[in-house]
Amino acid sequence: METTAIRRAGPSDVGALSELVRAAYAGYVDRIGGEPAPMRADYSALVAAGSVWVAERAGVVVGLVVLEARPDHLLLDNIAVDRAAQATGIGRSLLAFADDHARQRGLPEIRLYTNEAMTENLDYYPRNGYVETHRATENGYRRVFFVKRL
View 1: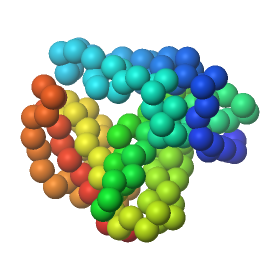
View 2: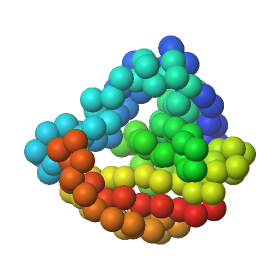
View 3: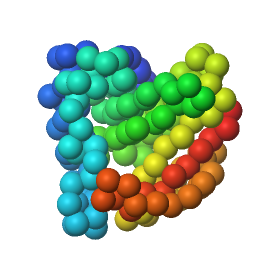
View 4: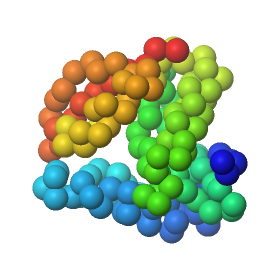
């Protein structure tokens, strides 16, 4: 198994981040009826804010996670893995990184949401310790909200 390194994203990563997200979420466009929110994000601004970390294998960006520290929790705003590298443990590595990131900041839980139409995620997050808290329509998206207490 290849080694995955996780590091904070820099300005030179923005193009790769945008391409990775577009490819990773492309299969959901028809299901949702439009582009998922991560495809519309401003990765230049997120990188400048220090909110993005990348997973690399052999020097190639194969995943990303967007994390925002809040007063009482860590928001996992986006996680994406290159389609060719899915099911290789990168997602689990990024989730473990988020856990460590929250603990280092003394935050007791991680919150995230996914689109209701991304049915794979509705099974994936509970397998990784997340519990569904509620569902709601937000910004035109039907979202499912999860929490993981650390």
